[in-house]
Structure formats: C-alpha cells, structure tokens
Length: 183
Ligand SMILES: [Zn+2]
Ligand SMILES: [Zn+2]
Image (tube, rainbow, N blue to C red; front, side, top):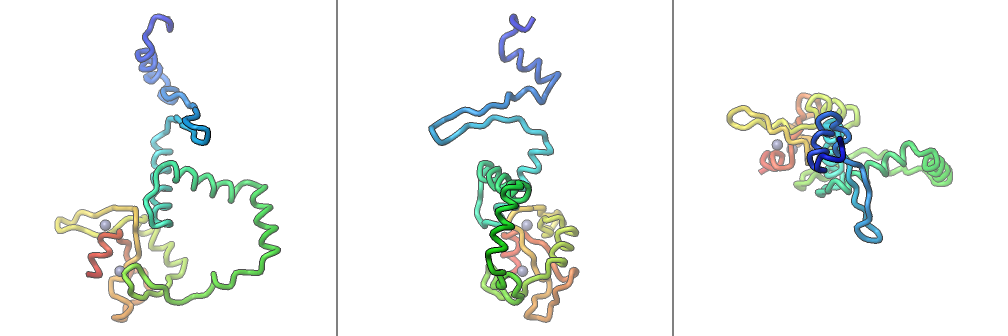
C-alpha cells in the first residue's frame, strides 16, 4: 500500500495518525562547521523555547535567535546537571577565593540613568509570581500589554519621592512602557 502513495500524500497520512512522526528528525552538514537540525516540537516545547528566548534576551540585553537560545539552554543544562562539569566547578571553587563583590548590597544605576536600590531576591520572586513576568501596563481601554520580553521592575512612587521597596509599590513593565513612565 505504501509504495503506491506519492511521498507528500504518504506524509500527510502519517501526520494524521502519528503527528509526532510527521517531522523526521535529522541533522545534516551545510558546511564543515555548521549543521542543519530538523525537529518537530510539541506546543509545550515550543512555549518553553520561547520563554527561554525571552529570558536570555533579557539577560543579555540583546535579541537572540533560536540557535542561540538552544545553545544557552544546553550550556546551562550541562553546567547544572553534567556530573563532570559539576566536579570541575567544585574543584575550581575550592581553589578560588570567595567572590566578595557578589554580596555587596547598594545602589545600581538603572537604564535611564536614575539610581535605584537593588531589590532583595525574595521581593523579586514575589513580583515575578504576582505579575508572571509580564508587563502590567494597561492602555486607555484597560487592555494589558502582556509583553514578557525586556521587562523591568518599576517603582510606582519613586524612591526619590519616598517610595518604598514594597510589593504594592512595585510593578513589572516592558522596556517601552517603562520608558514612558520616566519621560
Ligand atoms: Zn521605573
Ligand atoms: Zn508593556
């Protein structure tokens, strides 16, 4: 039966019954140092990939593509879960003196040149949990922005006007909407 069906039609038939088989996983060299990877993704995996891309764009403050996203995710995975890499890191930390700079609290200069207080990690977690990492700006019709890339924490009442580092004085805004607040 399979021999009489044209290839495209056969693929369509397979996709109907086994959607996960519709894309044949393959790697092929396009140059001596570059590989083309073809994979099918579940919606869940696609969401995860886009989320990691958002986070990595934010961390680098630069746009990155899927290739760079996958590489960043794999590097982190290896660093966290590869027993060889973990052993290396442990060894290095025993040799190295502790990095005191990492624990110094204080002021950092924000993107727009104003000074702000470094937020405690616990407070940052609370903001992330409440706002789900999405811009909370609402337009005139009350529709939320929902942008989850290039987000920043904004003080509703600025620190310079007595605003506190408290959950109800802090909100998540995307780069564009945050900039608007400081015009
Ligand atoms: Zn702000
Ligand atoms: Zn926004």
